[in-house]
Length: 391
Image (cartoon, rainbow, N blue to C red; front, side, top):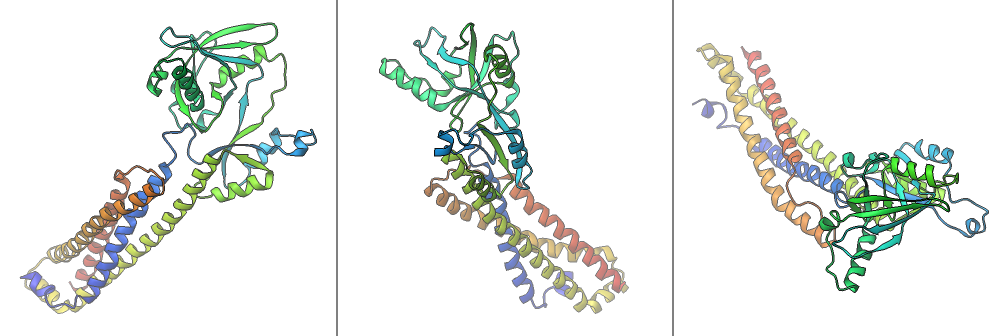
């Protein structure tokens, strides 16, 4: 009876317009949050570098070839880059100052040996669990992160020798050995692989192992920094590119492409997110205004019901439940529309060669739940204020 008395004969044009705006806002809200997360994940997991991180070096020019300019980084240059507002952090990439060779040391695989270039980086820049990436003098084996190019070279060698090639998992079980040397000393140390990367050309070793080798075998050679790692802020990769152009720096093209792509798409979805939040807020505001108008138009009926014995909380609950049901319908429609929209966008990304995770994100659903809770609270407070005004 109360539903018929309070809601049946009301003009619903305003609430229908608000519902359309709400479900569109909810749809774009879920979509933007979901793809912001997925785009941010793009380029991670399969690579060793953390998000928004690139390795850069100075461009080699004619003047640097002639010795007129340097391709190394000074501490002052590194500090100056770090001061830029769009830079999260900058760290040097430390290289070996001694001779290193790398070879298989396992009876199950053929003998393979090659001179290699080893480096170490700050663990905070790596997108792997570094709990196992540590070493101290006396340890039986050095954990290493290997460039995938070396594994390809090893597989090519094995294929040419008529031996079965090895997968990543199998390669991580093979025993290897480093030979550290200078003109007077030589040492062999076992090694094992804990990960692979396409982004770094050198074998990555723990900092403690690099320090040990440089201290013992470098013969006092000066440590030169020819590469640095730069971690830029989210969606500001364009400024990092401008910095590199100004300072004559370069990086691997694959790193630049991923960083540029993430920045552009991330900015696009961030704009959509902002518009979605505004749309949901405005449509929610229209619904709240309609609730106020509804109570005002039913002022006589509300006062009459209160005088004949209805408790205010019953009427408050009735108005709150009515609008909670409307917003629930809106949210369900928004989520339902998101599913086919997501499938279309996933297909567009895949067609463009961008293979992001196609699973659903929990955060986007939580955002809808939070929007629903906020609306419920607002509707309850508005109904309570309106009913007690007539009490």
